[in-house]
Amino acid sequence: MTTARTIIVWLVVLLLTQSEIILAQQSKPPAPETWAAVKSLSTGSAIVVKLKNGKTLKGNHVEATDDSLFLSKGKQISTINRSDVKKLHFVVERNRDISHAIGTATGAGIGLALYFSGENNETPSVSGIFLIVGIFAGVGYGLAHWFTPKYKKVLIYEANK
Image (cartoon, rainbow, N blue to C red):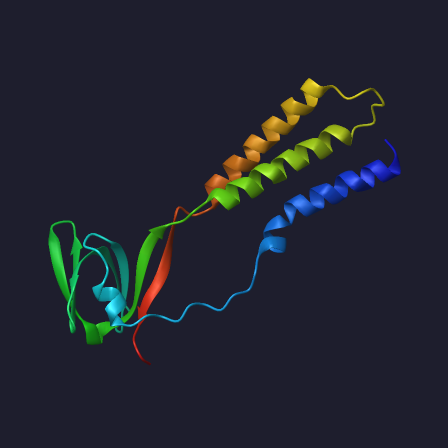
């Protein structure tokens, strides 16, 4: 394999493995909403409430009034005073499509690099390329699926300090 070809293969591998860093953007975190956002949650929404005393409660939103929050965990309903709430997060399912695409592309790139990094000077086998790239792409997809959390918490309310 020529030196130029080796350098190109390793540059492709490097770019594919660093794609999350390249695509990442710094953004300002959104300002927490007012209590109206809590009141507008639909019944049954999964929420996480951090209280001012340090406790964390997880459950489903039942209702919110101007001064109280009703949270259900199973058949038990808890009433929480608004003045006791420090933060409230809404739990949503994360879109993992981008992570899957990055994992698949990274795996395919690594498979391609490994296939061409050998010392054999024969004409590459198309079926061999597809086999190796397919296997590594599948492994990349699986790792991305395994390591990307399914749910994320979105801050919708934070009490004044």
